[in-house]
Image 1 (cartoon, rainbow, N blue to C red):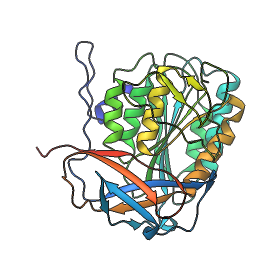
Image 2: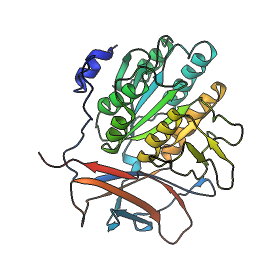
Image 3: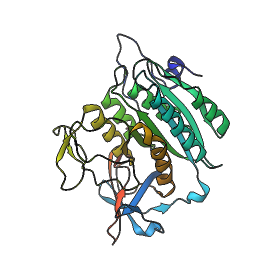
Length: 325
């Protein structure tokens, strides 16, 4: 099991009481862009689409895309679990069960690692196809201490190996971050500079009663919380505006910027939610293209749609290429 300090050093991050961490920087260039795309109509996955059905605009410039054959590509998943003191008793039991359900759903092409966080970040199992090792580590989970969500998310981004599988993070938390060194802005910079799909399962509900983002393959059409906007967000068209906590707003920004989703669930629903996340992954498309007609360095705004059909598309909204050194 790898504790916090070696993980941080492996990630190239040095922490100290007097020095704030520098914003993380990822790839220095982009030869090809890969987009993990979820297409639905009336809440149900749309199958049978080809590359010609998609339109991808990179900074508003149309791109020529190809479709990756998912029959030959697995997923490389980081299961990132909150094991702070608030995850005790039945909640921990259900989290273990959710992890077991997810691991049982992996195929022979898939890799997974397990990362846990509380007052420290641990790596019980590095990326592997050894399902028994993952199950044993899940059985040994214990809950104690504080909560370092942002640091754990950053480490998961850095520790995910690029083995050819589609990189994905599934993070569970039930509490606000009260320990991380890294700021929300630094994490948003990191996810925008990566190709990782991030899904988050949170047990916190909106502060007012009413519709919530159900753990289902038919997520509502959410409005993006833009930076600087009021701390409210419409959960579904025509619904009353519901107030969300700052940490839920942050998690939503992280997931939506990568093309993933924020799921909320009661403890008893966690195994079902994790199975649904994996099932949704199997119905996604992966598009690739070599950027043409746009500046290489800088922030790239993305728009993905399906031509001539009323299809809801969820995909990465942007990526960032740092300037050459």
